[in-house]
Length: 328
Image (cartoon, rainbow, N blue to C red; front, side, top):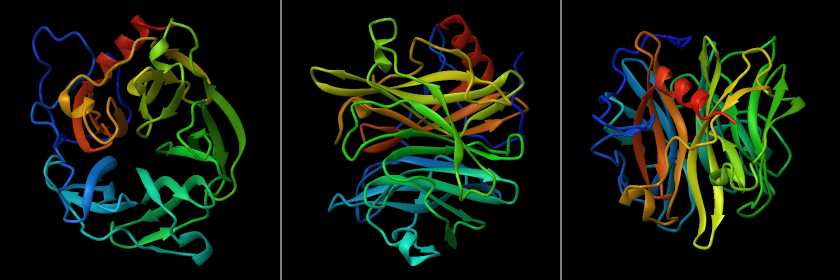
């Protein structure tokens, strides 16, 4: 059996796998867990990130307003399913040149050492990666942007590797980016980033067509005894537009730009109505996981059709088995 390297989480949200179900990830039967209008100002709430916090959970949520203005909001939950999201967006302390807002969206949250780091797509003369930290999800301290524009999907590893912080990202353009590979960057201090390494490319042709247009990192990588489990999104451009699905790969623990195995088959795609119909149809977009090292259980939070938030489940054994059986 494979093992998650991490902490026990006895209150992880969970439902058992349905009988005769042959995919590695299964949906919460009461999805979506967060609806598009769960705060008064919102048009949609999706692509959000959660972590264990105190005796429950905390998160940072993408809430697009009824003006379709993109911003990020803090929220709290006792059970990881029912959420109370603040009605006002996060305000950041820091250098005013960096904290002034153009837009903010698609956050990730990662606990490292003694604090919670937030990364998001931050508008600064184009999309780049914003970085901040908090101890309490009330006061947020913004650091320097990680990269020059244009970049999206900045995802930190949950610990230093060989003495450095590590971040996955996907270089992009100013629009909807009809291209994109995953890269890994290193930093001694979360301010100066370098030693950029290529991790994975899209797959052209029909061997794995669902990820032929662009790929991007999803939740914070999960450390296992076999490598870093990376859940990511892959996109194909169809006659009806982009379709987003989830994929999975296993990365080397010490050199995470090296891919040990990668599934050519997707692990979850848009099937349900709330994934297929919305502001942007046919999208499942993973942004966060909760893990329980004792049981190997994994809960996945994902955006659905750029409109609502869904919850799904898997185990480390299910995921690694599927990756290996469907590896390139």
